[in-house]
Length: 376
Image 1 (cartoon, one colour):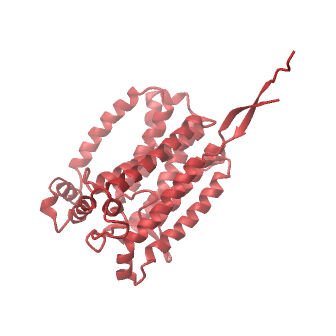
Image 2 (cartoon, helix red, strand yellow):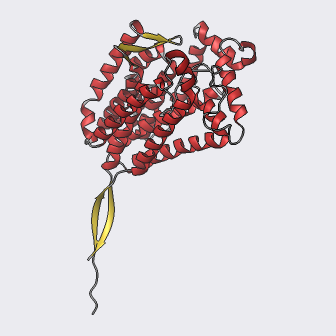
């Protein structure tokens, strides 16, 4: 009689290196594009072509350090800091209303000596940790409509504080909140009802909007009538997209970045990507983000527990909504809202906190156990 080999189950630790590769690649690509886009303006403003790249590189180093450290920490510890993060973000977002550095007509930054800090970026991460902790504590009760409303209402103070100075980020925070509760709730009809209420509320806000927001809407609908005003940046961005063709003019060869697209290294960097790398480059960037969202979805689906799944779902919502809003603004699909492209646009606070969120996602992925088999 031959000897029978017995299969033995073995639990293997897992880390999503595909997500890590995507993060590093997007960050590296972003730094290359940032230098290409910003060198001309940096030389004119600061007599230093490396000004924006140096500051972004410093933020990237801080963010990568945070990502590595956070990914090595058991993510369950963050459930104890969700309330504190929410309270801190709320206080800072209220402070920024009264004490803030104004840039390009927006007051969103707190001065910290030679540096500045944007509290709304902390608010996104705080919302993810806070809501994930709350929902995780009452997983069975979240299916009740009134409990769902109560949980969503907890985010209203932070949403209001952020919306006062940064409506686009407030929309992202609301989107994160909806996705986290949607993942935990078994009853989809509740979200259909909430969506109806949200549309009605959005209509009321639209009617009550301030004059400058109405100007933005008019410029969005009729950009040709605001060629020297509100729609100037949008039109120049569209010229950049149209002139790029299929494969672009080549890296560093953009004409629109030479003072035609204001602050091209920020919200409008995607338009310069289209001009220099063409439709092919733009599609590649979009595919990279889709791959990142897919990897985050895989981690969320295989997370060891509900808390980990909710954290990664919130991060996935953040990335997806922000990418969609940025590209929609650049292509004039929606009114200009001033939202950056993750990992690519210039913004130290945004980059650092995005990398910290990736550390959280990698930490959750390290908690996944793969079932393998060894044979004697």
